[in-house]
Amino acid sequence: MSTSDPSRAGASARAEVLDTGDLAGDRAIGSVSCDWLIVGGGIHGVHVAVRLLRDAGVAPDRLCIVDPGERLLERWWDRVEVTGMTYMRSTSVHHLGAHAMDLRRFARARMQRATGLWARPYDRPAVELFRAHSEFVVERHGLAALHRRDAVRSCALTRRGARVELASGGRLDARRVVLAVGSCEQLARPSWAPEGHARIQHVFRRGFDGLPRAEGERVAIIGGGVTAAQVALRLQRDGHRVELISRHEIREHDFDTDPGWLGPKNMTAFERTRDPGLRRALVDAARHDGSIPPDVARVLRAKVRRDVIGSHRTEVARLDQRAGRPRLRLRDGGSMEVDRILLATGFASRRPGGAMVDDLVRTAALPCAPCGSPIVDADLRWAPGLHVTGRLAELELGPVARSIAGAQRAADRIVASAVSTAVSGARVEAAAPPR
Image (tube, rainbow, N blue to C red):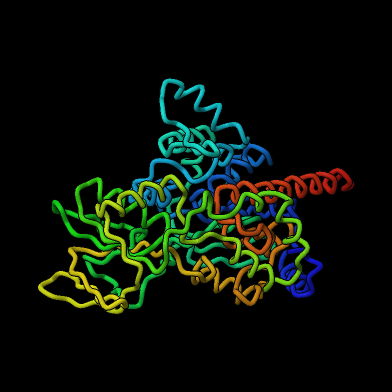
């Protein structure tokens, strides 16, 4: 939100006191490890890196991506593999490249003989195509060489940017930091589902190994959204008996937000809304959480009608254990004994980033809405030298912020800020008297 907001203005003033070092002085001191440090190597972090290199003229040796995965996009591809999804939910213009038509050009040049690359409507790309293009983008821009495999333990704002302490014990200093953290470490888990149970796992858990190991297992899947549906269809194809337990009927939507949120149709009124609480209400109301795209919903309904997949519109009341097999007691009075339980219950609704972001908010007195989300300016700047993207940018970018389209919009803003800063710095340097 704009710095005209009083709460934002006061916090900005406090942060600016910490950021008084001049860039030429930083070079002389030599204390800055990089100009841009991106925390998170997922969809958002990778796209922002591409755009900074391609459109903002950032030198590769002045940019670093910190992510604990063995490779960039690791958690994203782990999720795709678990679900067995075959087509993206996003359209052909939403990808990791720098230009809207890059994915189509790639498909024509590299995969012209392949079939089934696009799904109607909206020309949604096949996962195979999206993955090949993403790997091409990472390789083309040399991002693997910029990836530091580590986790950020803490981040502190300094007079010249930020200092990041790493889980390995290392330390990085950066002039500007982009928090591109998702909710992968903050999974929503029902209270009845114990942690550490080999037969009860969340499908997005790091190191997930909960898929059936024997033939013809009976598997309960908890959840009613696209992840639950895709996992159910995958396991049914693999020969398992699936029981899908959801609180609601199938909610069918093409996307997780209506296309009107990609442009002025809906965003004009959103941007005119100054109250962060009202913006949060608009975001929550606009998101189709727990929904399923029509093509997946059509197949799922057909399987349910033929009783190939069991469908139960209820909730789990409690879990019983008998002879090592979980038994679910349902709120509608029923029960079922299964071989394993897979949780497709999504992510917790709290602010992403965990203790690292919580500590940063406290130590730097960063402005937050009552819901905990950052209050940022039009450049997605939470404080001087600190930008956000993804869910952390929802109160500025609206309900599309978490998506690939949201990554593109965040990169537009951050790149514009980087270019503006570079131009201003060049003017100051040009106006300085010769030494």
